[in-house]
Image 1 (cartoon, rainbow, N blue to C red):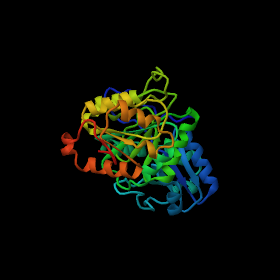
Image 2: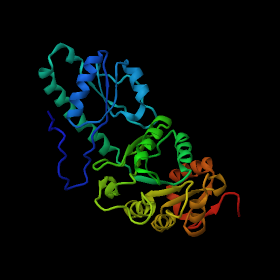
Image 3: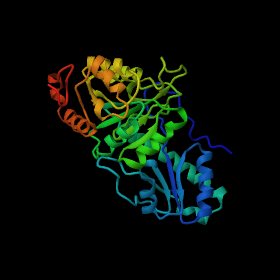
Image 4: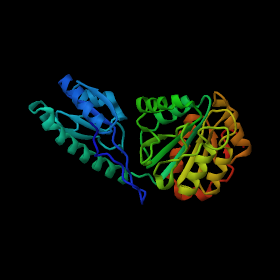
Length: 329
């Protein structure tokens, strides 16, 4: 039996239709399994389901869960990073006292309320500053290292475009979620780019990011690269202007050269991992030679430059259009 409460409305405006990722933590394993079946039948993704106590469940799941169904109605653990919202918590302790046919309608109503509250939180956290993390071969570890050291969100949402096989894209989400304070998500239609999030661009599905709302498109990515970094950068530049930026990490090819120019032409900032710091330097070398950038350096230097740029946006007009490579006059 399917649940109809999650039918996504037609969008006349750029409103969030994202669904929260659900975590279930109940002392009774049998109730966990039954509740999971009901929640998934309603169209939700259950990213954690266990008999762990609330505190332990939240610590274990980290940012993989947006809303919890628990024996208690209180949030059992602090937010994982400064500026990150507390997860929603819904008390379903009544389940053990009633047969399924009696508690299921109550759970469905609670899920409706969670969707409403979650979408309101997403709208309130719609990012005004969006930066693109661009990487190819060898870039994964550099991106992870960069994000691990960012313990404050600085009002930014990241879009992560990594040349990777489609079946490996979900691994990027797990890597970010488990090793950094940032909330990672695949780019699903109806989701918003929110402060403190990293949205992974799917190689197999072209997307649009108008007004910070993710829309899936039917046509493939242009050119030989998937996802196409130049295409993502050009759209972010058009949408956010000087409030967007791009960080180029290790990789092959030259996908990102045109994108770096698009962002700089609109007043945004571009940082480039120095070739000497890259596992595969070709992409960085291409952007440094034929693109446009503000600064180049190792991952720690890029993180420091990123924070300084965000803390001094009013001075961006003074940044040179081509910049200076660290350690070179």
